[in-house]
Image (cartoon, rainbow, N blue to C red; front, side):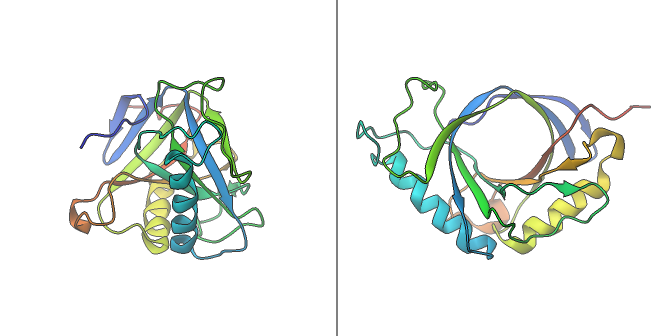
Length: 192
């Protein structure tokens, strides 16, 4: 079953890093606080957002599932010189689902749960590295560190947040799963 995904164009591929220009899109997002485990935060956020798209909104509208499910440390920017660590910030974790493109801010169903908000992700250039396997904090940390180590420092802002994106359900065999780590970049790297 094909799920709608954010629209993007690959503008450059260097090794296993894709530089993608994403168009703006809407997300339903929630913050998970007081939970330092990556997996528990992901599961809690997923269930909360799944309830929203299953009709827990003021219009009782069922919203189509999309991909990926995204997760990032909420409210914490990681300095370029620091290694990426999988840890909870004071603001917790931010988990989000993309809303189908048929919705805009005026027409998106309003969540009944005050911990969920609908917001627009602006058009942005992202560096993305894909990997297979399980959606775990250890994999997030490992692949985030590899992504940042492989990026030219001139493409990154002084502070940035790495996000994970998960495209497949848990029953998919891990070696077939599509997972990604991604970070916004200011420009494309120089090419030779």
